Every structure is written in structure tokens, then in C-alpha cells.
Image 1 (cartoon, helix red, strand yellow):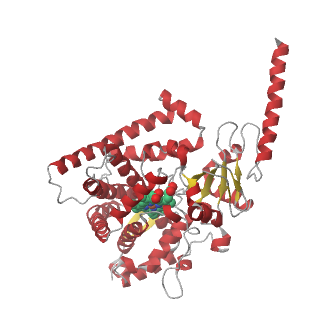
Image 2 (image 1 turned 180 degrees about the vertical axis):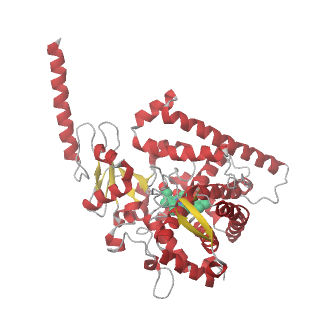
Length: 493
Ligand code: HEM
């Protein structure tokens, strides 16, 4: 018996050694030391609390591109890059070869078959459809009207309340609630009023938060492990299933009530996206409730946390840079029209560069290819692009790349400097560039200028600032601030 055990142990040791050497041979550009069994995961786990800065260090140390090998037999292997030329190649020049892929769709299960997870013809269909809804003057005007009303009716009363009571408030939570109400108004045509002085607990908003936070978890464990947990209905998978159920119920109820209005033909007044979709696509076979649910869910993801993230980091950076704040105030005193507020636009771009709301993206190759950096890509190779690192690369942004300097965005003629999207990647690049970029700037500029014009935002001293481990770069502990009103002479001239 002992002999057999010894034989098995010896055989396993030899196989492990061979496998280890095989991995080493295949991996031409390792980013980190490759441990037996655990691969390159140990140092990543150790640095999980500062994962984006750590990834930036590692990628820069290795010339911008290299292999990350996960634990054995987990399939968690990636070619990671922050090289703008590689990104340009994958997202534009050889776009057709780099897809989201099946694994992405499995991880982002809650997104259903919406635009974010779709590839090829299905993606083209979604893209054309959403483009036809977004890229109209009337949609811009609708958004502006909804955002301005929300600022007056909810944001100002909440900030006034916080100021009067002299209490601290989590500005990130304020923006999350604000943006949830805005997305509901635009997509579903109803406002759940999550942003109110008593900070109500709104079940669908909480469920949405949980469903979105959860997706990062599936990025960190082997597929077989989360699939087993999902099957058994245990752990984070159980919590996620519950959150999705609550949020889906909310979406399906909205869809049912829209259908009823549409059938009664009393929808003339409604210009929300769901009604527009139903009207435009009426009679088409695939436009069933699942299609509408998936489209609505994807729009919630697109438009909620991204803007919350951008505004939260922006306000933190501005609070830390009083000279930038003074210049923004100077501009908004002289220029009431948000479209003409160039310095504010530059400051938002600068915040988006340093803290891209979507900090990383993954792609999968279909066929063999060679990246401009000289790295070979095999069929099914998974590629991880660090958008966070790309905003902090000296070759692109110069030696002062870690500094918050809106001036770098202002041209000699006083306009915004054009930086190609494969370098300023925060809104993605190529055919899959963010469809909401212009809308986001309208919304962010209205909110930022309305707050800065009327209030002084003081970040609470010693409040810890650290990013969440999530697919969206939020602040782990929120942004605790105190609010004081600006004097009339200071802000409202
Ligand atoms: C600061 C705000 C925003 C940022 C930084 C941002 C960033 C991005 C990024 C990086 C992607 C690519 C994601 C991927 O392919 O994995 C994307 C895609 C997209 N975004 Fe945005 N986004 C923002 C706001 C919005 C808003 C407000 C909307 C719509 C109301 C929107 C609609 C979309 C859509 C529909 C796509 C999918 C495009 C496609 O796959 O063809 N985004 N966005």
C-alpha cells in the first residue's frame, strides 16, 4: 500500500514539475513570478487592496505588456497590456478579431443579451438601435431638462439640509441616488425619488448596487468554483441571485405597465427610452420582455455608476486642489452656458484620465494575431486592458502624469486639446466607443457647476480614500464631506 502511495506521489511530483516547466516555456513575457499551483496569484492577492496601482507598477516595469498566469487549471490566464498601440490595434484596426466572448457573457450574466455583452450581428443591432435613440437633439434636450429639474427639486434640498444640520454626508451616495433617479426617469419614465433628505432605502436601488458589485467576484475565482456555488445556491452567488430577482421584478413591472399604456394608446406624453423602443420596434419578433429587460439593465449600468464614479473622484480632486476650484468658479461666473465651460470640461477629463470609471476591460481573440508590441496572440487568448494604467503612462501624458492638471487639456486657442481615444481611453475607443460620452458631459457639467456655484464642499479630514474592488471605480468608503453655502459675492455674482 505504502509503495503505491509513494508511486502516486512521485508521479504527481514529476507531472507537476513538467507542467510547471511547460507553463514557463509557453509564457514568454511573465509579468510576475509563476508559483507552482498558485501561478501569479499570490502577489496579486497581497496587493488586492491597491490592485490598480499595483497593476500599473507591474505593467510599467515590464514594458507595458506581459502574461499573467492564474492558478493551475483555472483558465485565469491573460495577456495584460496598457500599450496604446496594442489598444488601437485591438479596438479599431483589427476590431473584428477581438470580441467579448462567451466567458465574458457568463461572468456578466445579469447583463443578459444587451449591448455590453453582445458580439457581431447582435451587437450591431443594439448599437444601431441605441444610436438612433441617443443621437438626437430632442434626447439631449430631454436629458438636460430632467437633470436640471432633479438638481432643483432633490439635490439642492438635500445639500441645504446637510448644510443646515451641519452633518457629514457621503457625496458618492448622493450621486448614486441622483443618477439612479435620472436613469429611471430617462429609461423607464418614472422617478423613484431615491435622493431625498431622509435617504430612503429603496429596494430596487439596493438590489442594483448588489448585482453590480457582485460581478467583480466572478472575475476573481475560477469559473468552475462560482458555477458550483451558483448551482448549490450558496455564498455570494446566493446573494446575487436574490438581488437580480428583486431588480428584475422592478424592471418587469415597469415593462408591463408600459405595455399597458401602449395598448391603451395613452402613451403620447411619454418620451422615455422604453416607450420609444416599444414604439419603434413594435411587431418585431425579438422585441419581447427579455429584450426590453436586457436593454434597460444595460442602460442602468451604462449611465448610473459611471457618472457617479466620475463626479465623486472629480469633487475629491477639486477639493484637494483649491487653485483648480478657483479657476472653475471664475469660469462659471463668466460663462453660464455649460457647453462653453471649457476649464470645467478639462477638469472633468483630467479626473476621468486619473480615475477612469471603468478601470479595466477584457477581450478575447478569435484568430492568431500579432500585436504592435510584438506579442503573439493565439486563438481564444484573453486580453486584459488596464484603462487605469493607460491614464498614468509617462510616454503618453508626460512626467507629470500623476498630477491633476486640467491645463494639459487646454489648447493654445483656448479649446479642448484632442487626444485620440486609444490614448484617452476612459470612454473606450473604436467602433465600441461609449455611446453616452456627450450626454455624460452634459450631465456632469450641470451637476458640477450647480454644486460648485452654490456650495463649498469640504472633504472630512482623515476620511480614507481607496477604490472599491468592482467593475466600476467607486470609492470603497464613499466620500464623506461637509457642506457650506457659498457667499453671494463668492459664487453667485
Ligand atoms: C462618465 C461616464 C461614462 C464613462 C466613463 C463611460 C465609459 C464607457 C466605456 C469604457 C465603455 C466600453 C465598455 C466595454 O466595452 O466593456 C462604454 C460603453 C458604452 N457606454 Fe458608456 N460611459 C459613461 C457614460 C455612459 C452613459 C451616460 C451612457 C448612456 C446613457 C453610456 C452608454 C454606453 C453604451 C451603450 C456602451 C456600449 C457601447 C458598445 O458596446 O458599442 N455610457 N462606456
